[in-house]
Amino acid sequence: MKIYNTLSGQKEDFEPQGDEVKMYVCGVTVYDFCHFGHALCYVSFDVIRRYLEYRGYRVKYVQNFTDIDDKIINRSRERGIPWQDLVEKYIAEYYTDTDALNIKRATVYPRATEEIPRILEVIRVLLEKGHAYQSEGSVYFRVKSFPGYGKLTHQSADDMRVTATAEAEKKEDPLDFALWKAIKPGEPSWTSPWGEGRPGWHIECTAMSVGHLGNSLDIHGGGQDLIFPHHENEIAQSECYTGIVPFVRVWMHNGFLQLGADKMSKSLGNLVTIKEALARNSADAIRLFIISSYYRMPLRYSTEALDAAEAGIERMRQALKAEGKPGGPVIDVDPFKARFIEAMDDDFNAPQAVAAMFELVREINRGSEKGMDILKAQDVLKELAGVIGFTLQENKKLSVAEEKEIEALIAARNDYRKAKEWKRADEVRDRLAAMGVAIEDTPRGTVWKISR
Image (cartoon, rainbow, N blue to C red; front, side, top):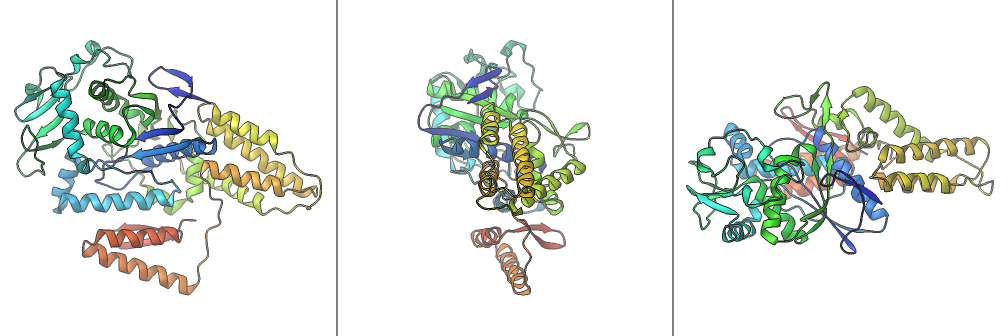
């Protein structure tokens, strides 16, 4: 198996350090609903994880929640609600959305605010080693103390330019970045040896990845927008903290999602939320649309392409319904399975793997027409669909009693949310998700649909 490594700029043989693959993927900052760009990232890495498991690896998959930062603080002020309530709401919404997309849950979902002791310990060690310094209650990483800075972006620190910020005068060098931010009036804070404050963005991922996976990871993933500065800074602080090189053996980054000529992002205001996408298309179709493009390449959002993916998923479903003649000539499934594995072994080339699946669909349909035994071929199609994360289930038709049960559960969840009993509300949400029900909280109330 070969994987493209952003660090080396080429495909490399994948050789994990042990019998368990240690995999960390940067998670969301929980201040708003997840959008289609998040779906692109987490579906892509879900497929990668599923395939590694299919090939016999045990995968420990860690994905964080950034649950304190400027965006969260500002949004909580705008809405006039405690930042903790905002965080709990959008963590719950994250689970609702990703469950509906059939994304397997991570082994661990650490939160930045739950990792403060470990964060403080990492900062303490970096200060002792001379890789960090204090300034007016904040602590900054000294970039020039790490000769390898820039190796992920393939440039030297001397050639890098950063945008000036309000805290520039507190730094020794413009490239230096905050490990600990001194308290500001009205902001949440934690106690540290350097004064009240909160962690910087980059340090949380070092603390969480090292804390849950050890000093050296097999795979670290995220979107291409995280290569600089986030992942570059992670390498610097992690390797300086542990003294172990490399911090990550394989860096993987998915391409941008584009809407027209622009990248889809909150800052541009051109978002399509996962909830909006699921209200229009099935989870299988969304997943097929995403993986029909090579994960490292840009993906252009298109309702036409999503509809084409919906039709493709329906062809797979119909192939599983086709009838053959038990005991008749058997379809040779080995070539299709071999092409699937060959494609996925080549840097998770899902477009080629899916092409092999559709070739198998055509063979199943031809075999059905010719009176062949197609049961084994259908089983292999189901097997490969599971590797990709397709359910290939028909949308369920509900009885009046089932609809009443769903409405009652949603009403109970809304009551729990009003009472800020988030855990009980999450339990109801999980029950609905297990029933195949996707919910969306809108200004008009909670709406629902059958997601699978």
